[in-house]
Length: 380
Ligand SMILES: Cc1ncc(COP(=O)(O)O)c(C=O)c1O
Image (cartoon, rainbow, N blue to C red; front, side, top):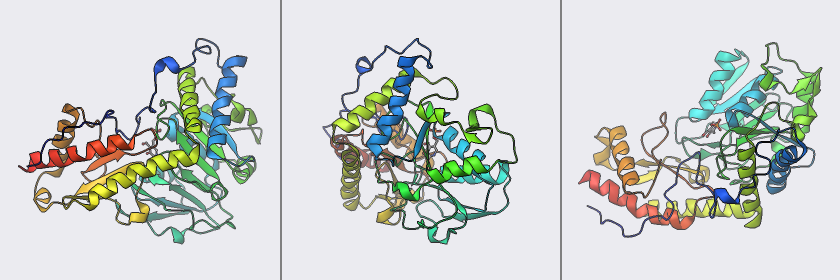
């Protein structure tokens, strides 16, 4: 039996998306002038393009990259990229958890592309990314949100590559260093590291990605919300705030608030530092425990955002693990110390604690003894 801790996290929001709002967030801080106006009106459009400008500035994105706001969150942005640009050459697709696997399914079963090589690994591991061919397109996820395994760097991507790299970076961007020169297509959503509202996706394109869009026409039809070109030319106004369809202007204001907070606390390096501190706190605690461990086998691949843990206690191995995790998560929610920390539905039973920049390390530190307590209560 474990003792019941006295201190609770001030903020029990540890979900991996939507994630916790930033410290000090309040609905009343958001500007509302653009609400109720057309998103094409001058003022409203200026706010939309401000999201693009502020995101580029905070991330230090190269000047010659384009960034657009597109429909349907990260999924919309990534699908849009795959459906408009894949098929021009062979594809290597790396998958090591549920979301990466989802892109594999779409490439093989929906786009029905056949020159596809799969680089796969089980939960907890990374595939051998060095096998990716430089003359082929490469599709991968920077941070596997459901396994807590991320690529440690982009050493596996050649600067001399002929193919394009497509990177789903939704749970990495703003918390991990992304080497833009190695990434041609990068996507994310607002409700991850910056704690924004879900709805829209961000699509970043390198000059080489733009070249692909303007020189290659896929053999399949594209719905309106995927169309990035017109008459063979990129619709450049999408990348300055003329969205394809109507965005939520409230979500836009919320994202601007989050981006301003990021700049105000010290920019990208401060955001990365906050996330790293969360991982460090969990790692120090795991190190001292024999009942729990990281799902990521190699410490270099441990995610600082979606921190995934597995229970290694021999007693636990003999039980209905999924049921016990459900119970543990429910106990922690009832105590109001942690919300939504069960592992993803397709992942091995375990815990997943969001450690992105909006989460305070003090809250992570306050949570950890509660995990000891909950596990102790279950084991009896
Ligand atoms: C790696 C990854 N890709 C895609 C998605 C889907 O994102 P969205 O719900 O923003 O479309 C998620 C959501 O958690 C994710 O973690």
